[in-house]
Length: 490
DNA sequence: TTGCTAGTTGGAAGA
DNA sequence: CTCTTCCAACTAGCA
Image 1 (cartoon, rainbow, N blue to C red):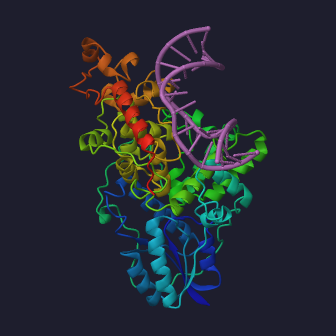
Image 2: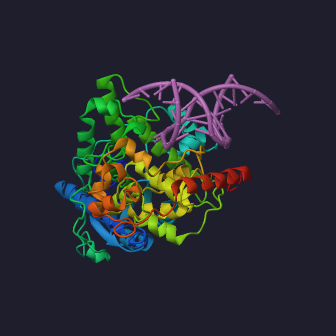
Image 3: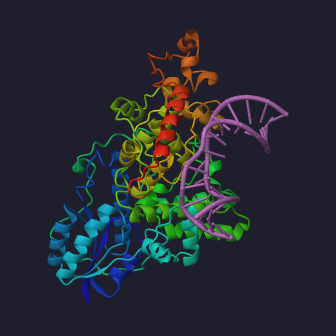
């Protein structure tokens, strides 16, 4: 009988957690451990909303462990240093953690694996964050990384159905006696301000219970779930949103992607007729797999330079435009409302992300996708390294997508879904009384109408930062040129 | 080699 | 209100 440690990083759940089962098997004592890594505790890297979500998730994990007479042990510091001491202090013979394929995690885990093995500790590292093991996909493609969703889908189909989720443990070995409390820190202890939730409770709480509950609530509408077609969902719907909005729970592994997948297949079996990838619910999980795989296998994936899948485009360095975009003062209500929703709630509908990303890059402002990526990385609850980089490259027509002449209009796009402007009024109260006719382009309203609405453009709300038609024409030309150079990062 | 086809989610105008 | 066409036109993947 040996003492074991489960090191939680993502995978903050009891259900479908092979690493937890591996750690619990035949263990005299089990130390369920989370390490607060200073690399992440940085308001510039991880915004307050996501940090709060993480702490909530840890709180629930601790509660679930305590129900099985265990607990969560929270350590603080550089993971390698902290672990080296803990493995020795607690005489750990087996260290288990779920595999993480992001570059920071790969480097960290490789160093820790060799440190542990040098100390005679067995290391078990199952894949459970994704449906498939990216190495298996790449091997099946004879070392070639799938360059498109279709190519990925064919490889995944060859591998067959993803592994079924494993059951949650019904009991756990006891933790050892500890020399200190090792409790979950508060936001304030981590140096974060803890503002009153400004969004009226629109931010979903973290934790696996909430993730599972939201999954089941969404899937309880069998017809909608079976008929789910992503491009047809409404980006201006906010109460409730038109998609599952489960990204944050998936990102932290509060909700297992394999459980999600299995539950969706159950709905399909019940309903019979259902949509197919890429637009279906299953298709959304496969997009995640595809982007995880490319992100894992591509060097410098979150940058333009040195990134072999990314087209090299001479973006402008324009701090003023970037600031106006990220601070929701572009003067385009649809863009500014979406950026406000992002800042306040840490979430945007996928198509809103498209609209603001297109606007920042190839559509209007000609600012590098890397700048937008950094803002999303900080503010999104569901920030996910490979998905974020992938989608920014997609929207800026730097990779995967190349119909660069398809530009989202900051005026007419949202109008199709929400002609009255409910969404804009919700997130930009200054515009609440602007007549629907002008809600997406208030600068066109006659001045008396602006006065009447209590929203004078240039005074209460900014003038549009660019003329969209002019910017679009100019940028199309620049894209044409960049495509003609046909330069890639390799 | 070459040619063909399909690709998650644009917009504007006109029938 | 829905459908088609034009805009100007890329490339991975396959036969």
